[in-house]
Image (cartoon, rainbow, N blue to C red; front, top):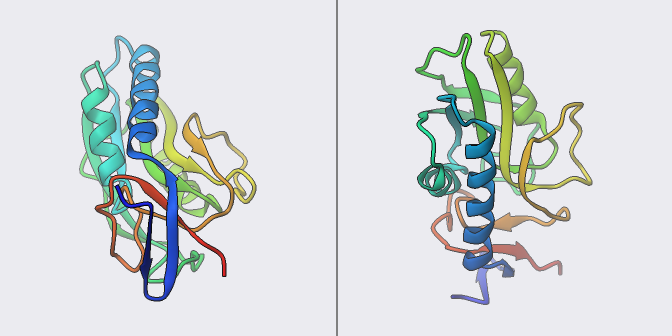
Length: 181
């Protein structure tokens, strides 16, 4: 496991280890499985960032479920969100009357998750909950709770485990934070 690395002149250091991530995902999956026992929820992964978390979470879920994906764009190649959210891939599932669980890699400002929630609520789901691996509680600007949170983190720029830097280094098994200069 790398402890530190540099990319494009920016230095990153280990923030959350692979072992700590795996342990937390097992805890989240157990809780979600208990909460949805007797239901067949639809898990909706937010691409591209959530795909690794989504995959690991789904494999730990002990109840039957369906999966789908939605893709938005709000970052481009920047380290901060542009604030402009565009829908790049629509859902392929029928949401009306179903339990929906949105799976995000990170919630920072909350603009993307609010966009998705508003989009899904127009289709009359039975219920809608959100699970995120990372939550930047200090900067989130939404008026609804995030139901399942892996880790609350400060406002660091983080990469790895699906989180990218200009579409790169998503493959890292741990999460790293940018070292401020």
